[in-house]
Amino acid sequence: MKKTLCTLLLFLCSGCSAVKVSTNINDVMIANQIAKHDLYKFRNHQHANEMGATMKALGDIAVRTTRGKAEEEYSALFYGKGSGGEIHPYASYYLTGFVYEKPLADLRRDLTEIGVKRTDVSEEPEDHIAFLCEIMHGLIVGTFDTPSSLAHQRDFFNRHLATWAVKVFEDLEGAESAALYMPVGKLGKLFMAVEAEAFGMVAA
Image 1 (cartoon, rainbow, N blue to C red):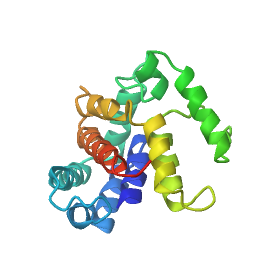
Image 2: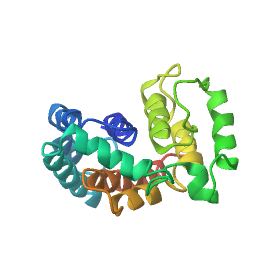
Image 3: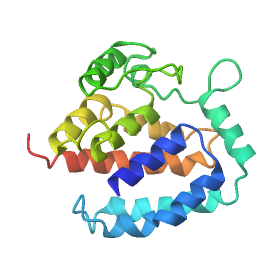
Image 4: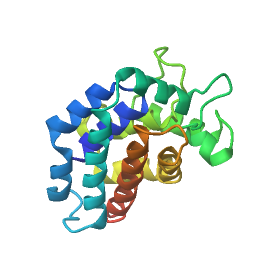
């Protein structure tokens, strides 16, 4: 479930087709799995029910949203009209008020250590929330060699997500342009809170 949610948040935060979103939700039955999953040992945890309800809300709005509408909303949220969108989903921006600052430099150092190199595929800086979700997914499933230990996953999360990810998802949930992305924001906020709590149980 953890890797499925990382993948879904990556997919949504990097631009998506509403049709694909609803298909993902139906195929993996996320709402049902969250409540039953053992990974965090939160069978009765308050976030489990909230996440399940949020996934249902996302599925409901996704099936009513055309691809064109989803793309328009994404552009309004993240690109705007010449001066940037409502959301600037970069660690540097949230932690310093500017892009391309120390949080990005720190991230690039850690990416080098795990063998991730920048390419010309995207012009976005690597501290974009979607890219960080992709890296977390890679650490979990072993994209960069073998699955990382929970301690390594915890350390990466604490250094590069814990200090700002909840805030960016809160802002996404409350953004003026957000309709499809409102439940995405809530889902991300809840997921990051659960991650922080779960990693708090991992021995140093």
